[in-house]
Image (cartoon, rainbow, N blue to C red; front, side, top):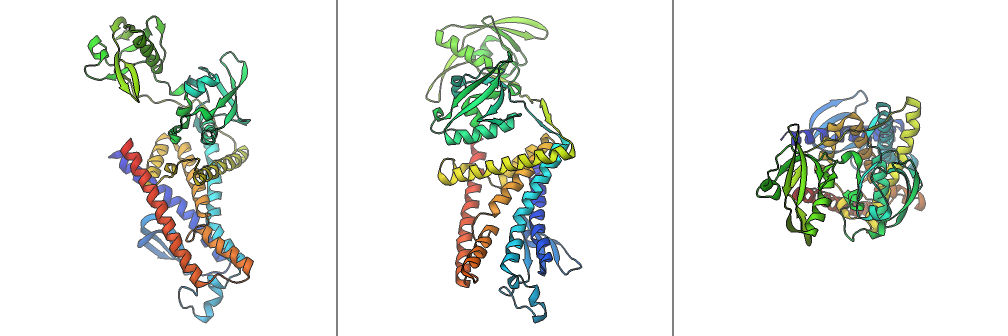
Length: 451
């Protein structure tokens, strides 16, 4: 229940901040162009709070916090007194209308840059890109434990997050990418990661795991956090809290090492001898693994699970005010490129439409990032603000991008588009927006059910 209310709270905070900046962009440029603004509203529906500014604008916070609007004086919507006609939006030049319309998305872009600048001054904690385990495609490419990833496809990746962004894009493109790594011995080598070898269908939200890479910092201690009833572990006398030191004489330092050793013993048809630490003493335990059917095949298991763990960040990207400007610019460019790339992959069918998130997922991400710390919440806000910047520029009627398309047509043909064309566009835009929102909600519900 605490998580639910936390998610709702941080969703409201996030959307409130981003929508306010977006609408302020429209408002500020409209006033500079001499347009009378009737209402500046954060949210839709009945106003919960309302006050009138000195310029006559009504500022409101409405009941439905999933958007906002700036209502301007416009002769196409209502009768305008002759003395106020020069303050109507429709009387302004095409260039002014373009500036007013584009100001909202651009405000989100500037906000994203400012948030990233602040994030780098605060210092963003992250994981060093050091491999803890390599399986599947990654193991085939030659990744080894404790390899530090230096560059992917020629791009420097100082953190695991950046490595994940680059590898996810390459995985969706199913291409081979060169990866420069530095081994535990300090020797640098280049690996060729063949991502065309990934399964036909993999969880795109967990591309790194599908590739077979696990960060060293995410590896859990080889301590027993629990086991199922009537499991081999329960029958052998394993207890919660036991720390596995060795299996068949082989040293074990992390929980992920247990599985392969159990599988090998099961395939050989033999039992295992575990050496565990319990209450400061070391005890040998003989255990017989069980065979289970899973994912269309057989696996050998002990029926144990690890203790829930929380990894600690081992690097911080922190810069002074001037240096942070350059870092924020680079990060803005990289994140914008990654977002546009993902959008194009979804349009072209190379990425699943399940990557579209709705308010439920956004609320969960907001709560999770806020619980990590200010740095990650600022990063989340910046990514969300960039998403709003790009989404609002899509040429969909009703959105800012749709209006910009109308003005572009007006520039080309020398006259505004017809009223009939505008009305038809409104219906098309509503249908497209409803379909997009429906898909987002469907994906959210699907994630909740599958978790």
